[in-house]
Image (cartoon, rainbow, N blue to C red; front, side, top):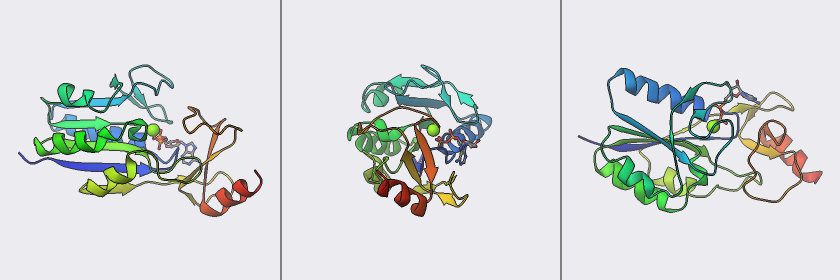
Length: 182
Ligand code: ADP
Ligand code: MG
């Protein structure tokens, strides 16, 4: 059996979780054994479920460290990971080991933080993945394709969990405009 790594990346509201759930549901239909993880610190909406902004949900296991997935995800065909950007750098090794064992690994996460900088383990994970899909949101200012997550709230914490009240999907131009006004 051959494994591989798929990455789904993009800004907030770009449909990463939707796309992850879509792929996992199709794997289920094909009778694949699936295991889904998310970092324990992401507690929006629900402690265990993975929930997309259009409110589809799927059961997942919250874990504290990337390496926790090795033990829990060892006896399945497909491993799904949401909010991958919040994991430690061990994530790359863990995904590699799982894929080497013949597991299909699908990881969804933000490729950039609110400053437009590569987020956590995502750039390195994208480098080792066989497939990288970048999905896009709609810019709330002008309607163009959005690849940036603009932080409306004033805070310089790198990790600030939140929703439409805190973040906006923006295109490059409107993101730059917003950053100028800071
Ligand atoms: P992500 O996991 O990338 O944050 P989700 O899969 O949770 O995204 O949510 C995607 C959904 O968010 C869309 O189907 C749409 O209903 C909703 N949404 C809210 N704001 C926007 C936006 N600005 N652009 C696109 N979709 C948006
Ligand atoms: Mg999501």
